[in-house]
Length: 99
Image (cartoon, rainbow, N blue to C red; front, side):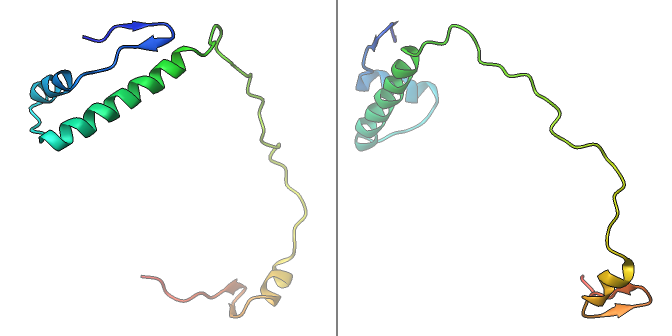
């Protein structure tokens, strides 16, 4: 039904789109038939563009671990952290109940 040669494609006709719709058991109107034929040919044209690309070897990159080592570092004290909170209680930050 579709014959591809490098560099060009054969356009799909309305009767072929109608046949595909029947195979898929999809009812389409005559207005939709024209629209779907145009869309089908646009998709095939995109494939034709992709077919012209040089893709002789896949592009690969070795992944290097991007995470830092897990090290304990000095941080702010509990007192300093609670000093900026709006509602400290017993050494913790009290937050509103969430349901």
